[in-house]
Amino acid sequence: MSKVIDAFSILLILGASLAFAVGVAALGERRDLAALYWLAIGGLVLRSAVELLRPRSSSR
Amino acid sequence: MAAPLFVNERPLVGRALGIFSFIGLSLLTWVLLGAGLVQNPGDPLLSALGAVAFTLYALGWGSLRRRDAVPEDGPNVIPGQLLQPRIRPLRRTPVVFGVILAAALVPVFLAFRVVETERALFAHAVAILAAILTITVGARVALSVGQRKGLPPAAERLNAAAVPLALLALVFGLGFLWLVVR
Image (cartoon, rainbow over all chains, first blue to last red; front, side):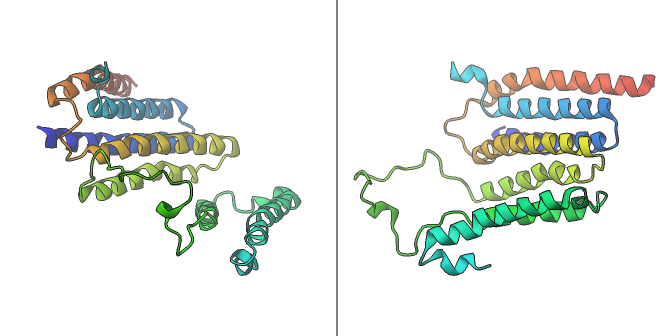
């Protein structure tokens, strides 16, 4: 199970990079709404990766 | 080019020539060129190479330890046992981090393709912020890959990630809906 979570974490990070890349490309093409959308996706994916790595509840 | 000749015998002169003089002359050149500085606004490769060259230049002038210097022999070292790392990285850790680093730099290179000046500045700022966040999280993920000690149980980790993943699914769904409606 831990190996699956490790692989999923790496996929999440790569997915976040892809989302940020699409967002930056959309900025260059003057598609601001699409850019905001993809940057938000990237942020959520990174947040998921952080929670998967070190849940907040474990530090309490 | 003269700076490396002075670095060993007169380090202050070498660094003054290599760093401050170079930066000052570069700044003077940019100011004197004015609008003529941006000759090829649609050439992202030239801009990217310039940024890479400046990065290598900055790294090249970083401080290095002298060849025969041993940090543990320094006068201010507190004697005692060597501090051991909490975890030892596995062989695949550098590979994982290398892949994450390469992925994190893709938005930075894509930002050079933005032609409009104001948008380009914003795109570069966003790309650099995204790269910093990705590398920061990616480094922690790379170090944790394969480790078992110090990490919470798998079920707890999955439960904690359930909320942001659910939000992600919701945002994806909204985006798909918007595409369909459009």
